[in-house]
Length: 69
Image 1 (cartoon, rainbow, N blue to C red):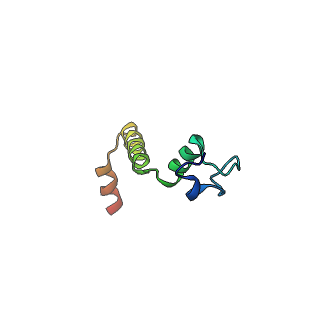
Image 2 (image 1 turned 60 degrees about the vertical axis):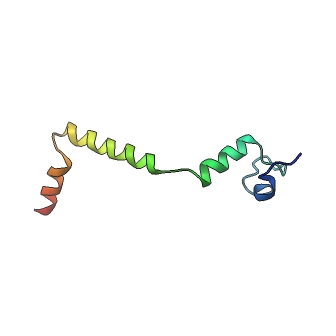
Image 3 (image 1 turned 180 degrees about the horizontal axis):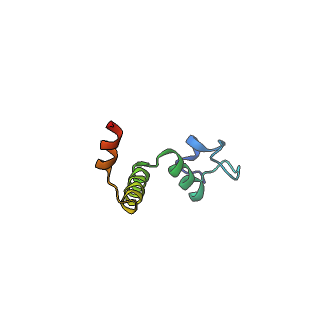
């Protein structure tokens, strides 16, 4: 039985077990690799920066002011 993604991704590097069929695990890998939205990672990086600045007693505004000088 062939699936809808076998024609697109079968017999490619995404066919991890080389059976010419894309199963659920392989489709999850394809989905994460090709169609992932990386916008959430930048939010967490911004949160980490804000946390570190707060621990140092600074804010983003303080950094902008010191960057001008």
